[in-house]
Image 1 (cartoon, rainbow, N blue to C red):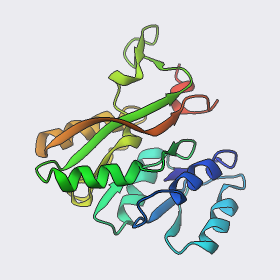
Image 2: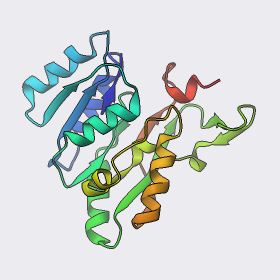
Image 3: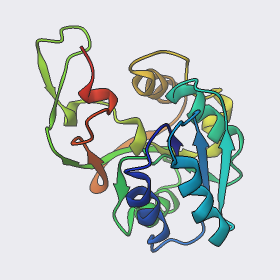
Length: 198
């Protein structure tokens, strides 16, 4: 989980992870140079939970922060949780079970419940709106760790780094878009990237 000045939302995100029915997880929380009390809040969680690790870096934006989290991870699978979003209680369990029951599949994406505006401006034509169900939402990625390592993570681009990464995954691995809506995507966060595009 990458975060930057997310003090107001972090508790919701982290609590949703702590409440997972699947308990064999680790949280790599990457502080992307926050200037508020986000890090202190995460440190208080870490003090009570050895599965939480915090990595600090200068402000380098989301792709670099996610790559830092990937580098510091140790589990068999990698997924993401944006610092202003949350999981339903069975989010991780359903995905782990799906991959175990379908060993030919390497990588999952999709399965999102949207809170707030379900449309975003088209990156090529900002006057045109696209429904989020037609977009790649990188926070829903769930895959074998070796995929992220082999593909060297996310490219350092400002927008659509998740789409670019998914294209590379699809060229090399078996990918499935799932439809169980267990990732809760809060579009009502005023400074989220999809709300600040111009």
